[in-house]
Image (cartoon, rainbow, N blue to C red; front, side):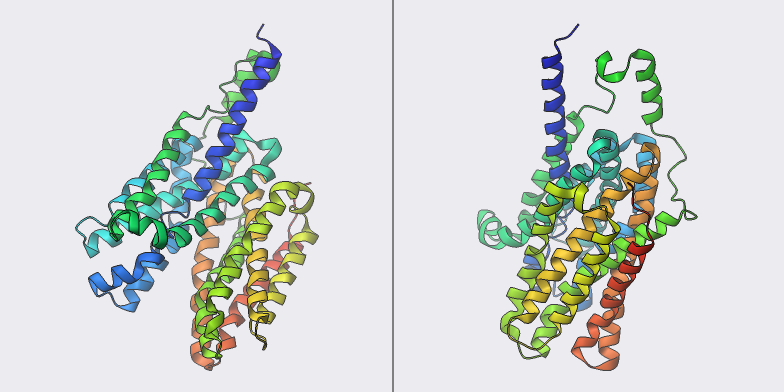
Length: 410
């Protein structure tokens, strides 16, 4: 009989490794995507890109996150979540590193799309891994990788210009290689992670017969990959993710132009910083008090009211009121994002998590692209800067209504 303390030590070690890999994989969802904006002026200058091409370079990956989520679910059903996540990470690392080969515009755009497809595979794989590895602590594990995602959004913006570009002699293609290195390292760690059934301790597994039954239950089920569009929760989760993402991307897109149009350009940096840094307190709050706070109809509905207050503050008069509004929006969007990501592992059987997540991501990221586009169209039609936030406000109100009708897991 193995010593129980040794078994518990090994189990704790596996849990720490898995949490670390989840955090790194969460960061990798955004590291290579957001390595582009800091070097866009260099790319724009070298290739003489039009503004439409610049917008496509930034916006197409987000759209592909939605379009490729369902094929990603198929890959998870065939390979299993861990192998699919490893494959997705390798695709992201390689395609991101070669985006600057040439340098060539066709390669830049083609490899950007391939990279986005790799991210789209990774996204539904992470909730599935949470369901396999931490089914009893799904909220906490989701908050861990969501915290990594938020840090992954901040690092390229903070480090590319002052640190990475000087390190590679000002070469934007080489900067993409630098940001691909941690993604490749995460793929290696993911491949080394023990699978859900690698424990052989009878006391933990309930004996060999139960272990075999559990192994069969957790084995990927071929064919169960297409989202169940008749399932109400698929649409509700998609609306929650899409409304939240639409508000976040619209705020990033419109805050600079809105503040310029209203004669307060000096607040642009502060406003964008508040929007993105405001996400971190929400992540930490859910990390340490997630199950008590997050998966509650009242909490999620209250956060949408906070988003609406943030939008109102953003378009209000006053010197620093818009900055406060941007911070409220960042907090509210991060809170709702993490709750949305935490729900599939707690609402579906292990084999069903990838397709529920894929449906959520397909709907959510499609809406995330449409909300800013619609907001911009309203701004152009009415010729009033505040009009750009009308559609994002409607999106946030939709999330509020969805949360009130949603049956959260007990």
